[in-house]
Image 1 (cartoon, rainbow, N blue to C red):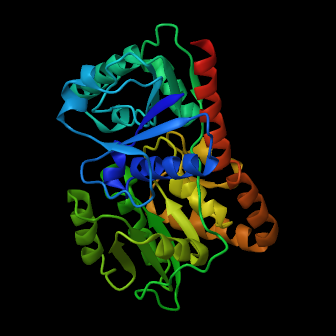
Image 2 (cartoon, rainbow, N blue to C red):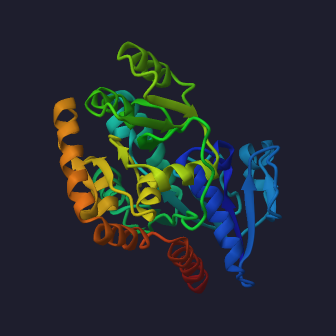
Image 3 (cartoon, helix red, strand yellow):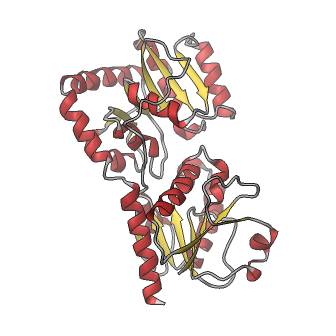
Amino acid sequence: MNILIDLYKVKELYSGLGQFSYNYAEELMRKQRPDLNITYLVPRNFENRNNWNSIQVNLQNRYFPIFNKSYDIWHSLQQFPSHFPGNKPKFILTIHDLNFLYEKDEMHKLLYLRRLQRNIDRADYITAISDFTKNNIEDHLNLRGKKIRTIYNGISVDTQGQGLKPDYVDEKKFFFSIGIFNEKKNFHTLLPVMNYFKDYKLIIAGNTDTNYGRQIRKQIHDLNLTDRVILPGKITDDEKHWLYKNCYAFLFPSLAEGFGMPVIEAMKFGKPVFLSNYTCLPEIGGNLAFYFDDFNKEYMSSFIENKMSYFNDNQLILEEQIKKHADRFSWQTCIEQYTSLYQEIMNTK
């Protein structure tokens, strides 16, 4: 069975799509299925340090796909691929979210819906990374009789290692958050809350070289929080794991997510997580996360204080329940479901 998997988004390795794509390839390699001949489509000049069987994107496979090598299955790991098969293999489209419905104006919503509709029309099989995304697709697009199956993302975190303590961390307790700095992440709502937690720091990791990142920096300055809110930018996996392991709580008030990988990463460490109740987050966090009903600073600070008191009083029990919930989202389960789909497709050819 010859399968091409589009990993083009590994070019944005620090994004959710980049992390998903990279780890998907790594876990599939570990699976060692001799019946699956996998080729990965990777960005130009991609440094292949893991001995993946890969081809790099070029003008031919983007604009003249009719000349591309033949495959039995072509699997795009994201919903807006730039490259398509030309030899009519079975095409799997994985859809992560319809966040544009919550972020864009009406004209751009329509443009994105039309583009996604074309990709759905082209696909033979469609997967979604959450039931929320699946329901969104069914509500806003014409599937023309095609079925969607939900396959949750796998999450891989080294919870046993110590990680690496960043040099900007002192002995104060700290809240942690992470993500690309755009408005949907809603990080700005966390800053006024810190005035109610004078003895704590807040660390928000992620690329701040965006308009929203610059707005956050200005707000930190205006609120006189420069000594208590830290924006370290991109961090290493070892640093991220240390921050998850040692944070007081994980705060993630995002307004639009297809899955929300950092939520499960934090829960793998048994940490209390505070989320918005928007899009897929209640589905992913389940009844073991705490959800903000609004983003008023007095309400948020009181809510965090009350829920942390409850968590601390029941820490041993809650930590184990949270970890058990997070273990549902394993790469082993994710890859098994996708390889079963590959086999199902081949059995029907």
